Length: 67
Image (cartoon, rainbow, N blue to C red; front, side, top):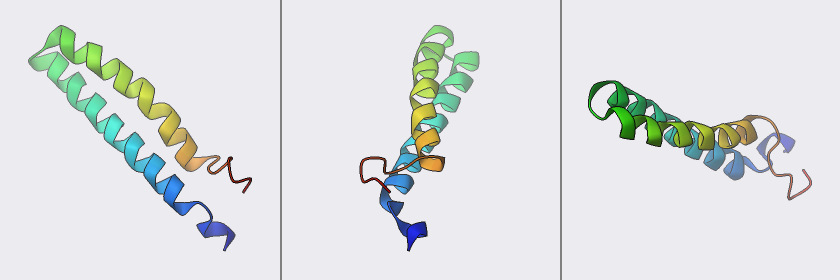
């Protein structure tokens, strides 16, 4: 049962982090090809925002619940 504690929070954090990571990668590719400045300006915050979501999904989840 301990394995399934807060599974929803872990899954949602992983999905949000993965989406932000994909958006960051897409804008880096666009930064190299189509929109040099705008692509990198959007890609850097997307990568920075993805890090806490992915870190929480795999390390400590549900600190609020005390699990």
